[in-house]
Every structure is written in C-alpha cells, then in structure tokens.
Length: 303
Image 1 (cartoon, one colour):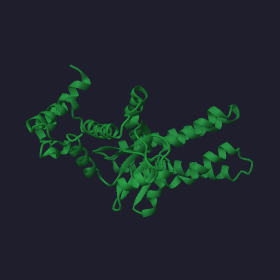
Image 2: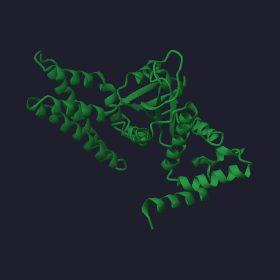
Image 3: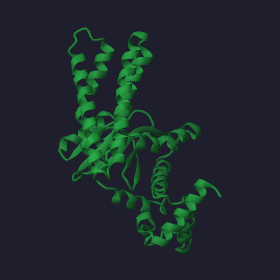
Image 4: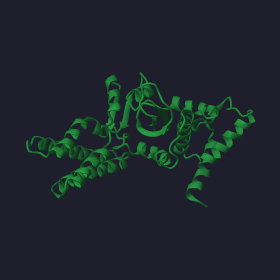
C-alpha cells in the first residue's frame, strides 16, 4: 500500500470535477464492523472521467460518499443511474445529473417480459423508440465535423424526444392505465430533464454503461474470491483497481508500467519514489508513453 497510495492520491487529485460518470453500491467485502452499522458489508464506488478512474471503498451506500468525493466546488455534469444518493448533488445547483437510458430501457423490457402478452407489444414499442434515439445520437456524433448535417440530425433527435414526451403524457392522463405501465411512465417523466441533457451536451453519453463495465471485473472477482475480508486489503484493492484501469484508459500496458515503477521503488530502498506522481500516465514522457502504448497494442492484438 505505501508504494501505491501516492499514485492513488495523484489520480484522485487530478480527476476533473466537470463531466464524469459515477457508479456505486456494489458490495466488495465483509471487511469489519463499524459502530452503528449493521453487518460487515462495505461498498465499492466508481468515479470515472475521460482520463481517470477512481474507486473508493466505503461502509456507506448513502449520499455522503459522492458528496465528499466531489467536494463543495464541483461543477459540471455527472452521468448516473437513478439511485437516490446522487440526487442530493442537485442541491448545490452546480452539478447536473444525466440519467441513464439503459436503465429506462430495462423498465420497459421488464413490462414486456413480466406482464404477459397483453403488455409485451406496449413495452417493446417503447424499447424500439429508445433504440431510435440511440441511432439518431450515433449519427449526430459521427457528423460533428459537418455542422449542417449535425444540426439536421439534432433536429430529428429533438423531434423524436418531443414525440416520446407527448405520448408519455397522453398515456398518463388515462385513468385506466395499468399500474405497472403508470409506474414506469411516471419515472420517465420524473427523470426527463436529466435524460435529455445529452441533447444539449453531445459529450455526455446516453447511458452509464462505461461505469457499469468498470465495476464488472470486481463483481466477478467478488463471486470468485469472496471479496477482501479486511479493510486494508479492500482499500488496497480499490487503489489498484483505480491505477490499473487508469493505465488502460491511456492504452498503457500495465505489466510494462509496473515493471518500471516497481524497479524505481527497488532502487529507492523499497520505498515509493520521491517523484512518484511522475509515473502517472499524463506525466510520463512522450517516449515512455509511446513505448508502453505500443507494448499494450502488441499484448492486445497479438503478434
């Protein structure tokens, strides 16, 4: 841990406080008892930006975790699922929440699957509309260098969303609407302002899938090795997850990077180098970055 912690703190301190993604609440381990807390389960939170990945182990799944992570001066857009803990961040007026269309899609798929044939076509109809939104957004992003075409597709996207909102509100006015359908549509209405943020901010994805994927290895690992079992090992795991995924985000080969960094630690009598932060991806020399990126390409693509 003493070798890795300076790097972890460097990644945390560098993480932009603008647009980022968050995902939390995946149990990592039963690490220890905490006064006032029932059970031994702690949670691994993930915070991602375009250049960094930060994992944090915490005994709480409540709002104080993201509030503490982003601090009092954070501004920008946070891409999240609809977990209530994130919504506290709206109170400061400086952070906007972009909600996840993939979770909305799951709502309609559940209706189609769980409520029989009478509701299947209704649910899949909404799923098809969401698929159309994804398609229009992909077209729009591919046309960023062609302003006229970009604006044309943007207009189509806005019209599709307007039609969806109109259909939603019309169905909600139906007093005989099935309760399961009403619940899903009310959630869609309640989260609408965050669901459409991606239209005005093309850099914001429509879903939180990148953050979901970032935690997949840890979830699989938890099922295989049952977590960490102690607080210090859970915290070390979170630091290593942060470091390794940040390296991969920069297309840097982790094995090659670790060989160089741990060699520098050995040369410093087994301690972290005094200039440990110079080993962070954005502080590496151009030659170092190129060498490690080429090594990663060979490892990924094969000979």
